[in-house]
Length: 108
Image 1 (cartoon, rainbow, N blue to C red):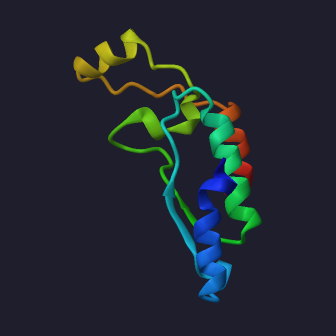
Image 2 (cartoon, rainbow, N blue to C red; image 1 turned 90 degrees about the horizontal axis):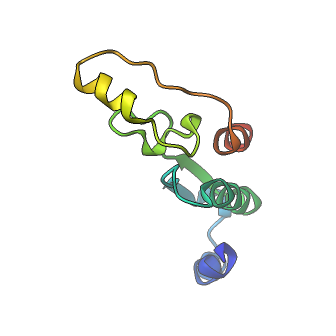
């Protein structure tokens, strides 16, 4: 699907004689709790690497929202976490290796 989506763009790049390493895939990523997020991230990173594009990943340990913190895995943080945050407690995030983080860490 990714190849098909970008096919017109790749054709344009070739037609304009733009070197692939001059193309930037900027701020790609997805909500960590989406079904298939790990597959999407793996597929998009492989596509970018295969085409020799430059890249900027969004985001590593987003400071405003946990949705892009891939070290948290695909599960929610739980009620207790959010209640502690509401009380003003400095709660550690349960970061760990998981399918979202391990693959992406090795290829970014």
